[in-house]
Length: 167
Image 1 (cartoon, helix red, strand yellow):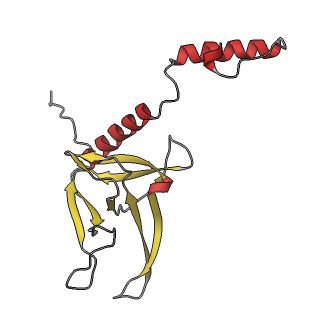
Image 2 (tube, rainbow, N blue to C red):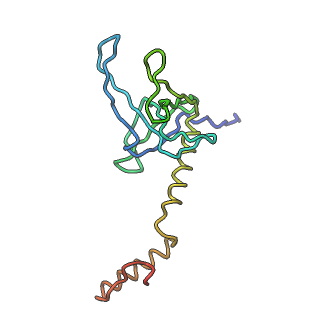
């Protein structure tokens, strides 16, 4: 019997809200004169990879697809698992102005990371954000029970409490 080995993942999928993505940015190819397009993805603030905050860094994926699971305002970005992604950001002075190099172009800070590192960092950043912005400390079952009580009170014509602390 032949041994079965697990094939490595070909793609790593990253899901981001559309506000972090510029899709189909048009440009004219200087050599051919053809109009082409590309995509730009900007990582959300407080995205940390190897102890470095890479929030605001950008990369250009080949494909950006509508998300199958998260809804119409989310995008799925397939990245090849075995290729590094170059994250780029303009180097800025103290006042926030981009620094122009000797060649007349903006200087860039470049970091090479794996798609899996990006996926993990985004997941951790979302968890931190959710913990910091939790609306209340009640568990789901407690909130559901209190919502049912409020609904029952409304059906009976009773006055319902305005917030969960006055219940």
